[in-house]
Structure formats: structure tokens, C-alpha cells
Image 1 (cartoon, helix red, strand yellow):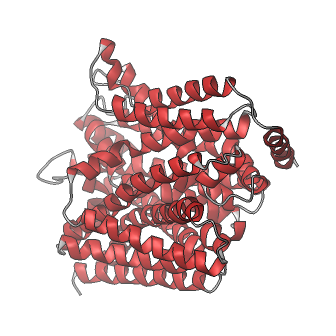
Image 2 (spheres, rainbow, N blue to C red):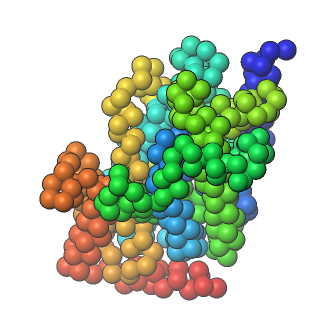
Length: 494
């Protein structure tokens, strides 16, 4: 059999496994709580790997190794910022969010939590946050489909649209059928595939080159400055901007919704240990892949034309085609795990936070589950239409979507969990400020000392905090809000 045949077999095995997990989850999904949060019964291991897999996407296996291959360890600052941000997120957000979402009206989405936590009878908070999620994540999902189509086009020579349709169809199938439980368990498998591949490639690569000493020597010959975390091409603003990526974790709905589904607040801390361990292995593996790539290909464009293909190229060089096929599947897993999570969060915002506020009458659980599955399909259809012809506009929007979510939701979530004086008006004003600042700042450049080159998440995040604090100080929360805050704090410590 040819190498391509072995790789295709691995891909088929992966696809069948994802579909089977979706069908398994289907028979265990009975109501909206099951569909949106798996009945709040996720064990910490599944929750942790699901959060990691839905977070990282193809950036971990292609973008990060490619950047490190091309520029050296100076590109590791984003990975450092993300790792620290993820750690802090698990420690300070996960336990209290798990408790508070149950205390605040058993909230099953981030917008519903904000509305219930602040007793926003106007529903402005739910509408504003629901619309933000709906708009940005539709573009995000579309970008993932573009990545899937491009993956099949570059790896197998398949037509872009056929590859995109295949990725979209299978991802939508297991998400639509199995809901949060299917997404979480497929994320578990995908997360293990990703970290396994990222460990295997550099370990076997080091052996292939001749040992750690030979790798260091070969890399140093190519670039004597490769190992420096700072250099003449990296400014202070550049380092601050890279590290500031970590702030985004507090406001990513598709990540923090995992915290709401864990069985107990205590298990959230266990999940943090597992999740950060996974992330460290994954990031170190990505760095190791880039280092081995430099040692093997010496940045020679004739030997490796596309730096972002260093993981794929090393996998095909070092392993049997069947194993290399599963490593290709790991890249697809990274893409699909993120798309499925974003689809489900977008669906939940559409049904739980927009549709239910319009339909004032009581809706049955079965009706809501059907509506949620319909929403998954419709969002995926719109995203697929947008991805049919790849657009730089979509990809450019996704580039600052992390900042948009981090700056609009991050400070609001932190204040909801740790400041009793936050009011609905303050939260709404802060969210709008954060989103607007990200949009404005992201379109500026230069300025005094290059200040506008600062990553837009930082001014957006700080602006949100300042406005939310200032507006909230003009009013006061209801007594019932303060009592709920005390109950949530006490329940978290119990």
C-alpha cells in the first residue's frame, strides 16, 4: 500500500471513532441540562482535557511550531502567557464559577449566569453577551472549517470544498447528536492524540539527530541566537503583548463553560492540575518539535518550504505512514475540537439566551433540545457558507476575536465572582467598553513609543475593569444579590 493509503486508513479510523462517541452520548442526553452541560457530571480528567483541546486548535501543532522554527524561542512568550493564564483561570475562576452558576438560578450558559448573577430583569446583559457570542463564534467556526478544508487540500490534494464539507459534516454530526457530552469526550480523545503526537515527534526526532547534544549543536550552527528569549527584534511592548494573551482565558466562553460542568468545586482544582500538566506537555512538545525541525531542515526552504508544516513533515519523515496518518489526524483533531466547542456555545447562546427570552411561554425540555440541535445545524450552515470561499476578512477577525472575548467577558466574569458591588449597569457598560476598545485599538498602529502596537486585549481588559468599577460605584446591588454572593462564596469553600 502507498503512504497515502495508510494515512487515509488512519483518518477513517479517527472519523469513525468520533461518530461512535457522538452516538454513545446521544442515548445519555435526555434534557437541556444534559445537552448543554452534560448534567454537570463531568469528571475532572475529561473536563480538563476538553478545556485544553477546545482551546488550542491547530495553532498548537502548526502555528506555534512554525513560529518557533522561523524566529527562535522569542516566539515562546505567547505560549508562556497562555500557560500562566490557563493556570490562574483554573485556580481562581473554575471552583467559584462552578458553584456560583448553580446558586444563580442554575445557569447553564455564560450570558444566563451574568443575567442571573446581577438580577438583570431587563435582559440587556443576556442579549448583549448572547449577540457577542453569536457573531464572533460564527466567524470562529467558519475559520475552523477553512482550516479543515485547507488541511485536506495540502495533505491529500483533496478539493478544498470537499475537505471542508467532510470536516464540517462529521463535526456537526457528533455535536448535534450528542451535545456537550459528545463534545467533551471527543475532546478527551482529541486532546490525548494531540499531546501524544507532540511528545512523540521531538523524542524520536532527538534520537534521529543523534541525541540532545547533537540537536543543540545543529541548531546553534543554524542560528546562534535561537535560544534567546529576548533579542534585538523583540521590543518590550512585543513581550508584554505576547504575555497578555493569557488574560484572554478569563473570558473565553467555550473554555470556561467546562468549569460549569464539573461535578464539584473541589474537583475543579483537580481538573486544574490535570489541565495544566496537559498544557505544559503540549507546549513543551511544540517547542521541541520546532527545535528538532531546525536541526533536521536547517531552515532550508528547499527542504521545508512552509515552516508551519514542520510537525507534519517530521511525522512523515520519522514514522511509519500509518502512525504518520494518526499524527495528521491529531491536527484535524485540534481543529475539530475547537469547532465543536464553539458550535455548542453558539447554539446555547442562540437558544438559551435569545430564543427563550423572546418566547415568554414555558417550553418543554424536549422542545429546547430539538431547538438547540437545530441551532447547531443553522450556525454550522452559515459558517460553511462563509467558509465556501476563504476570506482574509474572516481570518483577520478571528485574529482579534480572542482579544474581543477576553476584554468583553474576562473582567466581567472576574468581577461577578469576586466583587459583590458589581451592578448590571456596570457590567453592561464595561463589556461594551472592552469590545469597543479592542475594535478601535486593533486598527491603530505606532503612536508615542509604539503604544498602539500593544496587543488590544490589554487596553480593552483594563478599560472594561475601570468602567465597570466606576459605573457600579454610582449604584448598589440589591440585597438579594449580596445574599447570593455570600452563599456562593460559602459553598465554594465547603
